[in-house]
Image (cartoon, rainbow, N blue to C red; front, side, top):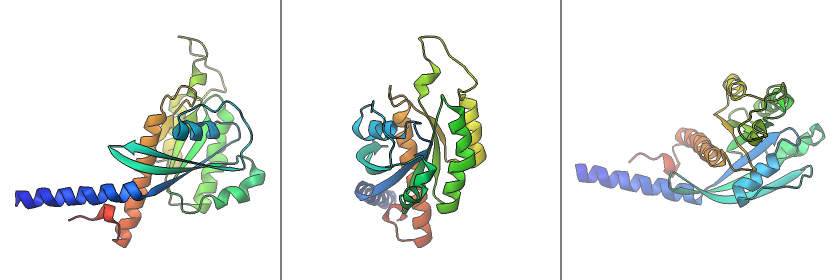
Length: 214
């Protein structure tokens, strides 16, 4: 009985591994202009820091990442922050597995817009898809060694955590695309959120190899 149980567990794990290895997870970045969405996408996918800035209409990145020992294919869609481009932006929401709602830690207005604009937009178009609240430009909190610069425009960790809880975010992560701080943690959260979403949908259909219990 124990041997059969171990074999069943092995088959189940192999099915899950094969399923996720072949699957592409779609992650869409939203947020105000100039909060660092493009830099974050480039850091995740090419492990480089994007120094030049140009307003994005629509851009797509791809990478294979390893989380919990399993490879996953990530398709990351970088969207425009301008209201004028909302029609184009919403098109990219189709069939998404997880969203990154980004704000800049050195710009509290971008945090306010998360609650006033970005989360309502997601709730209108993709109400069931999980989203992660992401505080970008973490390095801006420390402009000089050993000196924390706090101003009325700087967002504290507590403010980010409280908003994430208030708007129903899957989690809250702070990152620096410049130094790479927090980026690996964010990738793990992206995969975990997307997997949870997939497994919930598949459990209803009872057709997903990753959800089969043998």
